[in-house]
Picture 1 (spheres, rainbow, N blue to C red):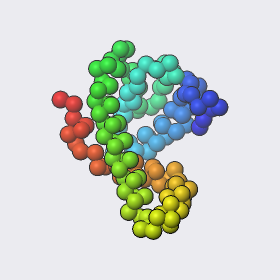
Picture 2: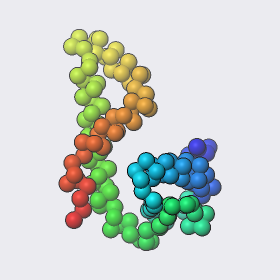
Picture 3: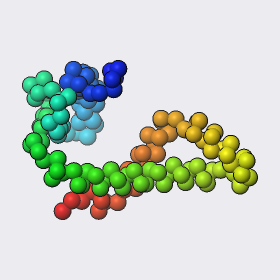
Length: 140
């Protein structure tokens, strides 16, 4: 799903919620033998109201306004750790799969970036996420 400006709006969010999120959550709840799920959201203007986001067994809860400054330091630490690990992972793939010959290495670098696809990036992000240490995710 997308829109021309690439910005999220409440209509697009609502469509995503009902057509993508809800079916996937229901499938996962069934697989995990769970009954309920919670979606925590901030108060971004693109998020529709709670009434629009009603779904069986899924409760949407908006976090309190002006709590970003309290929550963001942890968020930034997790994001920063993941970004650092991702960059290291991409560079490792590039450098260790390359060639010793300088001219061939330059060609390999160009080729590397040409064949790097979104799917590969998503898999790398997943690998990186798995490597984020637990203590990075702990706040207290």
